[in-house]
Length: 392
Image (tube, rainbow, N blue to C red; front, side):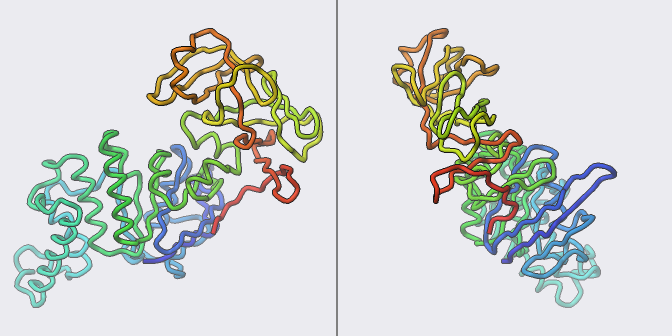
């Protein structure tokens, strides 16, 4: 296995800047997910790692060795594509054996008839067959080796694509949205299998997705990209609870974080939606801010007051043990969503006035340009935090 270093990678397509100086360090054996909306540059970055695209500037190092001038097969990486990229006329066994045959057999040894008679061909082919069977068995597809891709389900084809990567024992596994063509139930199953695969192999995985559920459940760390920039790299729980940038907070989480306009009334007090929140900030009175409150930061209260928002119930979504209550607040042009305990469901009606308390320690505050204002542990105050581009 190997570490991966991405140093100031830039890529343009004509006047369009796709990657804007991306730098990232991926540890040996780490599972890192490149997460972001469509068009943010994450797949382009993965293809540059694989050698399928050439960057305009910057460098890629695998196991501390620069690989910028190397062809894909020389980089010791294996890629699993969104479309699986299986040859439809070949059996599962032949698809999985192909990379080993290309690497282990000469062009003459790969000839259909003559190649079998050349010295060494039978021995190498037998070793390839053993490796293919071992890998297929570990993935639970040993009984499918004689079938062709058209005879397989989506999940089975995905396992074949993963197996074709595994047989090479690469230094780095690259996966480009490998689950996007599967239905919801199968995606959940395959997530668990990929996580288990990483645990068993101990390899370095770089995984691309726009699905935050995949990123949060699979990854050791998540690298969030937007518009060709790397906004934050952190463990899943940290990127959710402690985002550095408003765009990170808005992308991560379901339902979407509530963003409300606020103004500093005085030291430690912010005016928000007709109420006040206690938040110690190193910001002058009168400053305009954006307050982010996730749905689970709310709780039922019986009356208004500090750290309480009051609104009219627009809609209720029953989620089993929880409710998602949509509230219309005075001066706010979009509903605020609160996740509340379902035990109160029979007592809530559309149109009634509801009070919800806010846990101040769960409130996120951002400057108007989107930078996070974070409480300083030493002084008990919040200050502007720089955007971290590389997390080690």
